[in-house]
Image 1 (cartoon, one colour):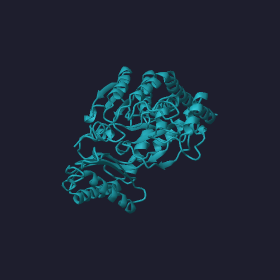
Image 2 (cartoon, one colour):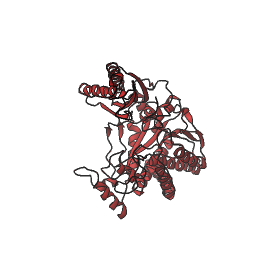
Image 3 (tube, rainbow, N blue to C red):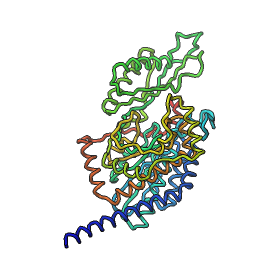
Image 4 (spheres, one colour):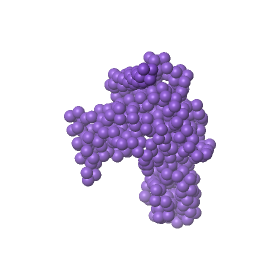
Amino acid sequence: MKKILFILFVLFSIGKLHAQEANHDSFIVKNLEAKEAQYAKIAREIWENPELGYLEFTSSKLLADELRAAGFTVQMGVADMPTSFVATYDRGGPVIGFLAEYDALPGLSQDAVPFRSVLVDGGNGHGCGHNLFGTAVVASAITLKEWIDANQIKATLKIFGTPAEEGGAGKVYMVRAGLFDQVDAVINWHPGDRNSADASTCTAVMQGYFKFYGQTSHAAGAPERGRSALDAVEAMNMMVNMMREHVDQESRIHYVITNGGLAANVVPDYAVVEYMVRHPDVMEVKQMWERVKLAAEGAAMGTETRVEVEVVAGIYGLLPNETLAQAMHKNLTLVGGVHYDAEELDFAEKIQATLNVPKPPALTLAQEVQPYRLTHFPASTDVGDVSYVVPTVGLRTATWVPGTAAHTWQAVAADGMSIGYKGMMVAAKTMALTGKDLIMNPLLIREAKQEFETRLDGLEYAPLIGDMAPPLHFRKDQNKVR
């Protein structure tokens, strides 16, 4: 009889715990749903004023003000970056961090319509959805704060406003400044064309400008007196393109000439090429970067010009954490994907017609949650450096029409309308629920830290940027700095 009573007691206790957890989840989800229009308005406001890296004064202030109004203490301009911030709500207990991004991309101006419609010639656009990224993080953090207050729970939330993810690597400077030293776990997300919470790796990257200085002259009247900086850029590019045959197949090398002179009949005395070098192995990236620098030096020697190298970013790949990723996947599955209404379906069909792919994926992909897996993607993010100092987890949600690539006008269009907002709220709910799990379950944090240490395998993190200052001019005058 005693054994039966004990079993009944255990079952009752388990049932009570499940009921309490369901109540907590319901509080978080309903809170976010009640404020969906408010957060959509914020995301749209950032979308309408797309600001480039280290210039996000309006966007960062908007998000910081929202957190301040909700009861967070906000410190602006951390790590010597005027558009960065840390917002803190301190009630003791575990410290859960969130990463917020809000920078746009140059040259991607686009209206929220399913056809190419530039709003500002040469203007910026949120082609990576960072207007949604930052807003969802703020929404998630405020909801968690209200849940903490309602249930008198001990926990501390830290929201890191991180500028210049699209080149400039703002998070690296925050890591170097020690801002993540007391954080137990970090949560983030990114817009995409499907819903997934994988444990993922990515490529490390070095990025910088090669600035060549020559001698101006009349290109026809006195060509022998000129020493073309553009010739040096082209010689460098030729050598690096030949180098592609002799690098690991997982390497990525890409460049763009940002300044090639101003008139064909003037030998240019100044030219600039921007390079990005990527590989999953950070040591391989460092070695390739040195080889690219040698090509630049050789080009300068052969054209009798001078070259200066300005590094603007160096970032690690992601260090995955399956303990956290599996917990986040559970919550994403609970939240579910994005469902289109008739108007959104029409928009999505028209967008897919512009994608120039033989067979776009089914639009129902937006509704689905992809199976959990350990994966790799060949792009890069400065979240990587964060993941090397604290257990970090992220997800992607269907803010874009299935089949849409990042950094396209089609992504910009969806980021400024309801399809983007719906995906944003899926992310906000999932992040908030995962934050709740970390706060309520100390064992989850402990296991995540154990996995983190195992994956580090004794590696001591050292930033690739060394002691350089943040390149605050990176987007402001990248074609003018001499």
